Structure formats: C-alpha cells, structure tokens
Image (tube, rainbow, N blue to C red; front, side, top):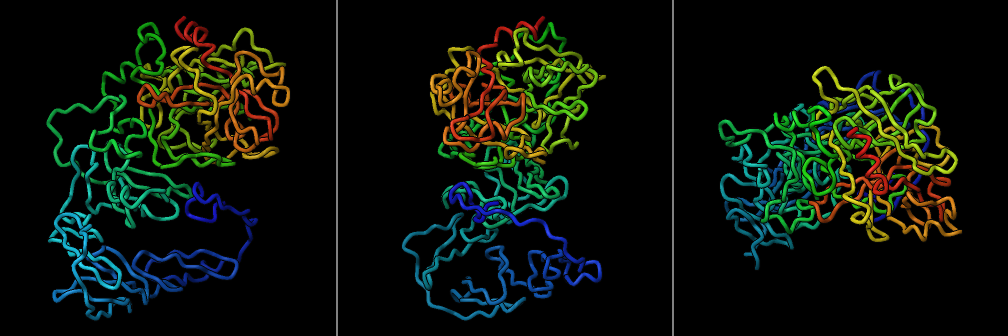
Length: 544
C-alpha cells in the first residue's frame, strides 16, 4: 500500500501485514462516546470520532471556528478577527482562549468577495463580509442551490442524494495533486462541501461505500430549471471557455446523469436494420466516461482501483466457473477475445454484466443481460492466437432493448480506420479489468483496476529478445519493456483504449487483451488483438 497521501508523486510504498485475529473489545461495552465508532485493534479498542470530538474515547469536544468553518484540536492555535482587531486563539475544548495581537494591512489582498486582509505573526487573515466565510472568504453561506452545472457553486451542502456524508477533498483517501490556485478556482480545500470541479452535470463529492471510495451527486436543488426543458442528450461536452485553463475541466467530455432522452433511448433500442454502422471516433454516442480522479495512472504496478463510471464500456462475461472481459461497442454487441469462447459454451450459459465495478458482485448501476449468440473469427488459431477476437450478440429484454445508456454503461468507439489509428510509439493507452495482480495469483481483484501502458512498435515487439515470431500481423503490443504494469491488470478479452486527441478525447478501442509471457516480466509486454485490422469483419457481422 502507499505510505504517503500522494503515491503518484512520491512513489513510496510498503508491504502490508497479514490480517491478525484480535479480541473483540467493542461488544463487551463500547468505550466510544458521542457517537464514536469502536474498532478492534491488537492492543485494544480504538475509537473513530465524529468531526467535532476527539480524545481516546471521543470524550473531548473540539473548538469550532465559524470564520473558517473548521474544527480545531485541543491546544491547537489559530488567529481570528475580533471587533477590535486580530486575536490569537488556543483551543481549550470546547472553548477558545484568545488574546489580542498586533496586525498590519497585507501588501497584497488574496481575500475574495470583498474581504479585507490583515497580516499577523506571518499569517494572512481575511475579514469576510456578511454572508461569506472560509480562510479566503470563498464559501457562500447564503447559497442554497446551484445554477447550470454548478461549476460556480460555493455553498455548504455536504450530503449526497443517498444521505451519505461527503468526504473532505483534502483527505488522504481523496488526495488530488493540484496547486493552491487550482484548488481555489475549483472551490476545493480542507472541507467536504459539494463541488463540481470536473464539469459534470451537477455538484458531487466523494463518499465511502462500504470499504470502497466512491462518489455520488449531492442533495442540492437547481436554482432555475426552465419549464419544459428536456434532459440533455449524451453527447460530448465542450468545457466552458472560461475554464479552458483548467486541466481537470478540459480533461474529457462528461455524460449526463439525468434520465436519457426519449430520442436517445429509442436509438439504442431501434431494430438492428435501423441502427446503422457502429460508432467510431468522431461520431456522437461513444467513447464518453466519467472520471473522478486527477490520476496519471503512470507506472502503477498492480494498477489503481477505478472509480464508478471510469470505464463504462467494460463488460464482464460469466459462464459456470469461467470469466472473461469484453467491450461494449453497441447496445447489443460486445467484442471479446476468441480464446475466451474457444470451447464453445452454449449461448444460454453466458451472462454479460455491464456497469460492474466489483468482480462477481451485483450493484445498483449494473445491467445483467443474456446472450443470443456469438461468433469467433473464422481464422482464429488457438495455437498462435492469431485473429483472437469474437463478437457476442446480447439478447433484448422485455422492452426490446439490450443495454440501456447511463453514466455507467456507454459504448467505446471503434477506430476510424487502420491508417487513422497509428498512434506514435510510446503513446499512453489504458487497460482495465479485474485481472490477477501478480503472476500465480489464484483470485481476481475484488475491484476494477486501471493502469496506463505505452504502445510499442511492431518492429520492437517482434524482435528476437521480445516476442519474436510469435508476434504476427493483426497483433498490438503495449507495456513496459523493463517490466511492471501490463495486461495482468486486464482480463482476457478486456479493452485497451486510447484517447482520440482529434475527437473531443473520445475513448477508442485499440486492443483486446490476448496473450503474454508471464506477468509484467522484463521484455515481455502484453499482446493485444489490433482492433483496427478487423473493422471490416466487425462491421460485416454486426450488420448481417
């Protein structure tokens, strides 16, 4: 596990200790007061206290400073404005002991919303006008709703639609690597108020869902919704021009979270002869996703846990005790590896789950579908893994649809052509799946993993010291030649996707996890089926 809040920057980690059986101290009598949660530890019970309490048994009340909307620990020191000037305070919970200190006007004023600035003992302090609070007067105490997408919302809502409490943006679990200026622009800080830093459709926040970090939209009304306004269609969204300097806001288009429009739903549910060709990069209706973390994913051995909605195109295929992954390329079509289905299981034995983030576990946003039929490539070779791809035709449900569009279920784009999919060597693409996290692992990862891998040229991959003659035309190579992250984090049949820089950064399916030698071994990068080489075959058999 990581031993610092920001693993991507520090790269510091350590092995975890084996789980220990500890005596149940909590059931004998919960020692935690004031609503604290008791946790059994090897050396006795441990209390996790609510925000406003501290102490071994949560018996001490913290000091709350309304000017900053912040709690302070016992003996902690801070400065605040008083009617006569500035005071220096120390927490003697729950009361603060304060005494006046000298101050002077700041040389520059960082305070927002008309706040004034004084400097004392090396600290700058903002006096906020009525209705504002926070260290920089950046929190609007009067704001009770959000406008448009809520990009400028700076209120104090901190509860989600499900009633879950929001987690602080600055906590270790939700650590975002950003400058103070970026945090201020997006309204983030050492608080848990709802915000929309990534141009989503409304304010949201991080929450704990069991033992997994997740996110949810906030319980917050929209200020003015025009009467008769139709819910927006799932199309790529250009970030507002005033936010173009924000790497988070301009990162990629965001699907809406509202109920899909009638037109969009009917398009997904149209008869096959009315659906037209499968969507490719540059067209509306594919390659969109939600991304709730500023993560480079670069060189993360073992992968990172993907948050819900990060890979809405990934499909989980189950039959008996077997499992493979695939990619949703159209409402009724999943593309996977031929070697997954080479033993020819009956279609009725197969189940496809979309929107899943935990392996072999149902979820609120999951869609479970039966399979009507499947087709392996006619020239697939189980000995050489040439032409390792298969199409799975999903079965319509009672409403005549297969998959239904949602923020958690979206098709990935196909490449436009072989020529247009020639990314430069070293271009970073993403692999995702519930794959084995190391060679010899007997179980799949509980959570969906994600990692970035660079593309490797066919010439290098077919070299004698890499894969040699085993690497043939129709294959794609990606990974680190020195070893580390590769398709071990993916699953057989799973997706390798790249961002199309010329098409609103839509996600394009470039590879299907096919084969490899070992797991992250030196000079043995992962090998994928090159989807661009099979566009004609895919189009032929999805329209026939």
